[in-house]
Image (cartoon, rainbow, N blue to C red; front, side, top):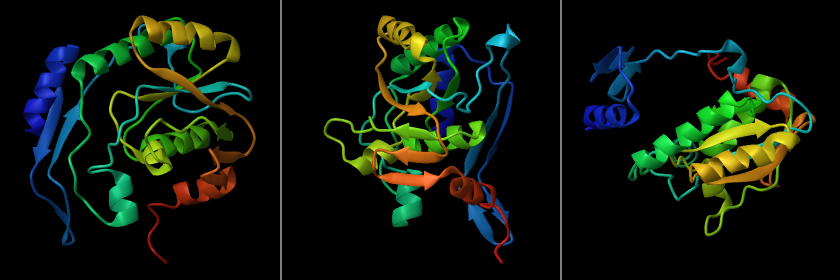
Length: 223
């Protein structure tokens, strides 16, 4: 099923898979990970000066969430890490919405409207915000996280598809929103870059230094 889904997505997005491997059994020292289809892909950046990285860049930049958040906690990192469960249906994917979302991001990149761009995948919005802050070595305050009908846990950790976390100069926000509107992609402002704290709507507040210590020691051997 995973391979069929990959094939459907690649045909729709017109993406070639140049290499890959499917491992059904992955064991090291008696510890197993899940069966894993691994894909190797190559991309081309026509103009290196339009390259967009994941880290936040400058004080005062506006942070925006592209795409819609749904109740998608099935199979999520939150469910596994915080509740010790691996269960539930995976997030739904509308491949046509996915394609439109990518086109909007690529158009914005081509017009140099984006300061940063990070996909929302493992861990959802909260993890993406933290990673962008850590990569850019700058804090962030997000107060516009609440989504209608969803509680804070879902808003922060849902792994709904077709979403990106981006930042823009304040003067470029309207132009970026217009691109999203043209591609019929949801977008909303959720915060701003600056300071030395990762603050998420009153739900999470952590000094950047403390988050970095946890981030950089995650794979360290246990003492």
